[in-house]
Image (tube, rainbow, N blue to C red; front, side, top):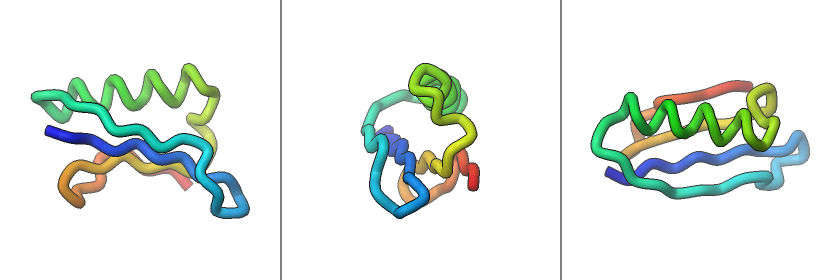
Length: 59
């Protein structure tokens, strides 16, 4: 399944926009959280989706 991880700056511009594939939501969420931590984006507005389903969100 394809997952989309997007991080937005306060002005609405994209800071990160990645697509990755995993078989399970739990593994994708784990990966998404690690990517956010690696880039120090965990406290910046972000979302992770799969087929329109919101899996991670921070505002």
